[in-house]
Amino acid sequence: MAFEEIKEQIDHVEDGVRSYVKNSLDFYRLQSFRSMMKGITMATKVLLIGGVGFIALLFLSLSAAFWLATMLGNTAEGFLIVGGFYVLVGIIFLLMNKKVEKPLLKKFSKFYFDEL
Image (cartoon, rainbow, N blue to C red; front, side, top):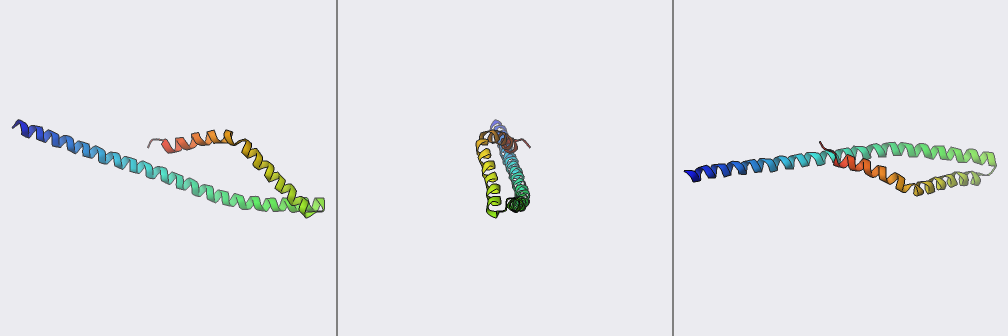
């Protein structure tokens, strides 16, 4: 009789452990799906906004280059000035890499490791 009670209690504990493991797996599956979808939507927004921004920047750069070319009387000089401006902006971004990296790392670690 005592063995039957012990067996029932062990079966009850086993059911509880199985339920806990199943719920934990479901929770982590849901959390990973949530993080993945947030990443996908963020990447989609960045691609769409970045694509439109790139096209706008392209047209603005071309118009600035042609405007400078008419001001200077030489098309090559206008394009060289605009190209030099972008090289200067690129160098500034390279020099500021560490200052940009830390805030991005903090933001994305918060985004990835936040609780449901």
